[in-house]
Amino acid sequence: MATVLTLFGASVLVFAVLNILPGSPAQVILGTQATPASVRELTIKLGLNQPLPLQYLHWIGGLLSLHLGNSYISGQPIAPELGAALAVTGPLVALGLLFGLAIAVPTGILSALRHRRASGTWLAAATQVGIAIPNFVLGILLIIVVAVDWRLLPASGFIPWSQSVGGALRSLVLPAISLGLVEGAILSRYVRTAILGVMQADYLRTARAKGLPARRALVRHGVRNASVPVLTVLGLELSGLIIGAVVIEAVFTLPGVGSLLLSSVANRDLITVQDIVMLVATVVVVTNLLVDMLYRVVDPRLEVGG
Amino acid sequence: MTLLRVSGLSVDTEGLPVLRGVDFEVSAGERVGLIGESGSGKTVAALTLMGLQPEGFAVQGSVEFEGRQLVGLSDREFSAIRGARMAMVFQEPMTALDPLMRVGQQIIDAVRAHRRVSSSESRRRMLELMARVGFPSPEEQSRRFPHQLSGGQRQRVVIAIALACDPALILADEPTTALDVTVQAQVLALLQRLVAEEGSALLLISHDLAVVSSVCQRVLVMYGGTLVEAATTDEILKAPRHPYTAALLQTSAGIGARSRLAAGRLPTIPGSVPSLGGFPEGCVFRGRCPREQARCREVPPLVGDGHRFACWFPLEPGAAPIAGTFVGR
Ligand SMILES: Nc1ncnc2c1ncn2[C@@H]1O[C@H](COP(=O)(O)OP(=O)(O)O)[C@@H](O)[C@H]1O
Ligand code: SF4
Ligand SMILES: [Mg+2]
Image 1 (cartoon, helix red, strand yellow):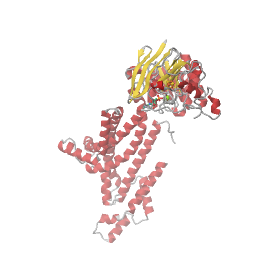
Image 2 (tube, protein in one colour):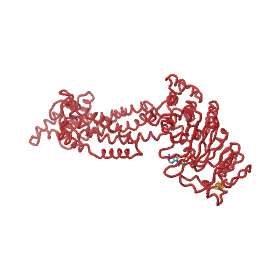
Image 3 (cartoon, chains in turn blue, orange):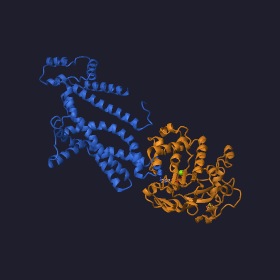
Image 4 (cartoon, helix red, strand yellow):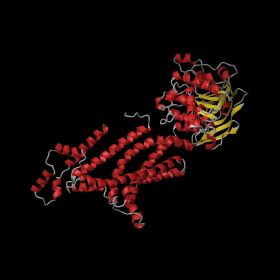
């Protein structure tokens, strides 16, 4: 229920903000040479002369029946274009997240286990540095070194999945690394804190008093208990990843949702912008809902359905 | 037969002494109490016996248990003894159990830590243990999570875990302190009964002399990481020699103190327990002791045969406890 309300609120906000912006889409589309008459004609054709609430209902009604409408610019349906962009951004975000986790979990655990030794401090410091690197800087560095100097992976562009799955994956590797490393560094600190928390917990001492060796006790009780706080952060980090994807797609010129969004904004293709923002909002809200449900599976203290 | 022989046991952290050369023995099947105000080093002593002292605590001296030297064992070697031969009941049942694991499973883990038994066999053992610690319907209650149990019930689970592999020695660190007054007596009686049935030895730690004297045959008194007196419960109650023990007696609820409590005057030992590194040179009780003299600047040795105490100017044997000295503020 709360989810539906959140999404409704988001849709009103998105619609309001974009329609309050000055400048008529019809004017932008037709360019500075257009006559007032042709602008008026296009405005009527696009339905932009109707009262805003009606425009909103029309748009949201379309979304609910999965009709995303037609682009103001090309006149083409938005759905296929957005679908193609999603086929880039979806895997990019997923790979970025996987890569981030692949970095965060081992480094977080290791730096927690060695927190009293120099190596642990060193690891923690390294993740601090990781957090401080902007993802686009890393992306550019990777392009220069891996793509240009070593010629290992493509520097930009995207080979569609339909053409070559391997090619598509290869074009996503560097962007996913750029995207995931920073998130991984942030997550690593949360993993470290979570593991340190478990290491100091009384129940771990109980487990060792039973006769479980230190490492076995930590595995037995640490995985679940540490995953509770990490899960929470993971839900929040996803929004960060999506925002990061917009930047990274620009750096690697990937035809993803971020690129589509940027070009739509530049073209005042309001309806496409609205659709994309709503899509992202839905993904974020639904993910948080899933995380919340997962949470209740892991932690029995939260009653199901509460 | 001596089960546990602790001699010269010292623990330091960052150069500060937490335990200073503690000596005592526990015989098989014996019930020994360890008392002292909060901050005296009782918990650190118990954890050190288990090899579970906090990180950065340096242990010196000797802990001989069942003929084996424990100081210096590796974690893996110690693990074979923990839970199997020596087990511990903790003070805080609220946090001693994993909140995300069913209590039955936590008991099963204790059984399987040392016994290679089938899962049905360990389950049977778990249900038996739960019944023994007083759960009326173990089948159903073993599926609960800790937060679904009361404090007293959780402590029963912790006791079941300690009993899982029939240890020869159980260390119980303030097992009833965190519980409601109404269930304290029940849990204490349960612990006492189970220890007797198993024939295990018990080291019962408490800041409350009343708790210890109702269960234990012998009492060790600790202050400032030092054993200041050790004697039979009877002698401790009737003829304490160390001024600190006498002061504890004065403040102990249930041993003549209830009437004073009712009169609105809660007796306390003057001053407070110093923090680590804040204890005086010489006798650790200096500064709070009414009998202090110049000689107390030297460390008094723990002397005596059977009834041992560490004080230059002990109370006369059989003299009435120094009533009144510590009452009021
Ligand atoms: N984990 C720890 N880190 C640092 N100091 C500790 C730790 N545990 C106990 N101490 C210190 O050791 C002393 C003895 O504490 P403790 O054994 O808990 O006393 P008791 O159990 O008798 O109340 C206290 O001064 C306490 O502050
Ligand atoms: S040695 Fe001195 S200060 Fe210490 S308890 Fe005895 S009389 Fe008091
Ligand atoms: Mg304690």
